[in-house]
Image (spheres, rainbow, N blue to C red):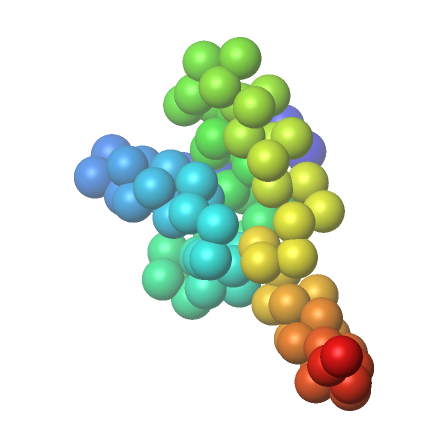
Length: 84
């Protein structure tokens, strides 16, 4: 897992911006940059200060909006709920 992700310098800021956005899924990041979730995490670990990386990981860990499948599942289940 220590294989370094090679990314062009001008793409680094794009990856960081997309990774911090709550509504941009890892799947969308892969479509736009070619980097899988594991590689995005690796870039974030390398480019952010340790405290910023820790904050980001806590923020995105388990966040439904960062994973398209979880988001779709949540939206489908909320459609089935009957409003009071």
